[in-house]
Length: 103
Figure 1 (cartoon, rainbow, N blue to C red):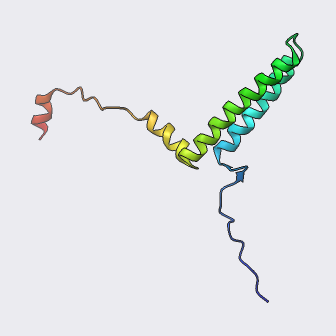
Figure 2 (figure 1 turned 30 degrees about the horizontal axis):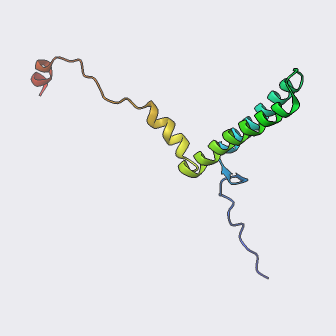
Figure 3 (figure 1 turned 180 degrees about the horizontal axis):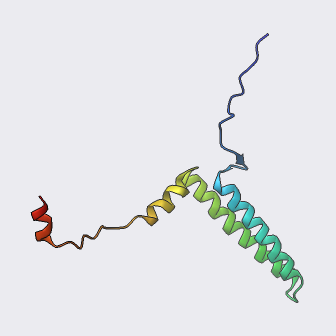
């Protein structure tokens, strides 16, 4: 009798094509839209206007998250944030004569 090895146990979690941090971002957008819907439905704003706003906002936000997922991949967002924190140049405020004497 042959048993197959559990392949893909190390694979990242994927939900609806979103991987890693994008799943959390998508969930945050969904929760935000639910809270916004609850707030707007309790105001005198017309139902159809609220519905159109929520659909457009959800489409734009989730579309942006899906685009980031496809463009950057699983670890790309982390690399992007790291790259943004790096300094553009390093300043050396030592006197040039002191640097030459040290040599």
